Length: 101
Image (cartoon, rainbow, N blue to C red; front, side):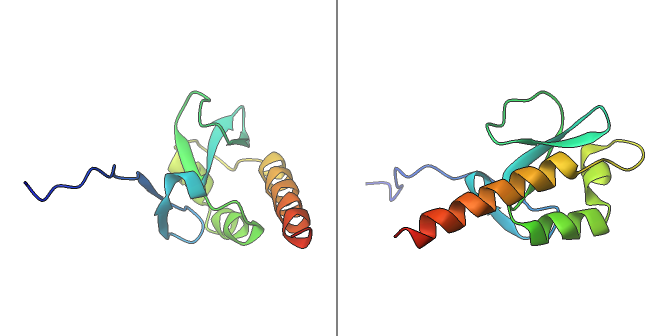
């Protein structure tokens, strides 16, 4: 026996809002599309991606720190309305699911 385990390593990414490392599946990938910061939950949209926890606190921190344009390497500010709407919807769904348990 070589002492190796058969578990696969889980890829980790850093949240651009709180700067904490987390498993990639726990974060939401975002991409820049025509001046907008768009959510990419499936992770299939083309282009450079930035990862953020899908909670309003981390999104707000990333906007305040101007982390999205820096991480996505785009000039100027990005419109994050679509991203905020997606995160609020996802959070609302989670609260409904938790209350039904």
